Image (tube, rainbow, N blue to C red):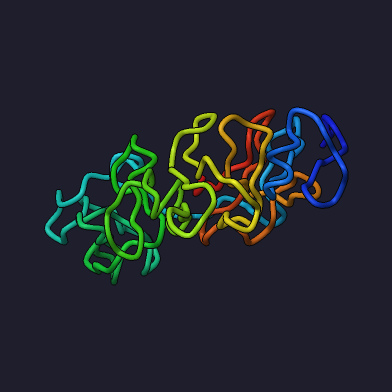
Length: 215
């Protein structure tokens, strides 16, 4: 992976002046970007199942509550359908008959990436309480800059931050307009393993900001 630039400007760490001076003094960081998109170490696909349309299954079409034959030769516990309300169906003794809460981050509406199950509830991850992924919270009180969940380079991020310590990520990046809370190591610009709320993982943008994802 090739760094476009190898340096980082961080407030309080160097006497940098110029266009970014005011923001740096406010506690923000200028991050570099990586040319190749890559997940953080150990961040393989999360394995979070998606709703029926994404798996080719139609919920409720069989006598057992799931698609006919969905559990033939499938191990117990295999996902077999979506029952609605963030309740998922799983194979049990050859039938799609076991229902329990869907896993965190389950995509409950195919084709709508923001439609996720968070703590057992069907929500959209485009709010200050769940920005981009479940549990990524934008600071709206007790901060210098009130943050808002907004699209940034195609992904929802907490924007308008004013200082590193006011971001849930611990890094307020000023390499974008508006500034945003970056899922990055402020010293390197790389993803921080374990920073994104599980089971999401960090993806390094290709010339764009890093972001948390369930994919």
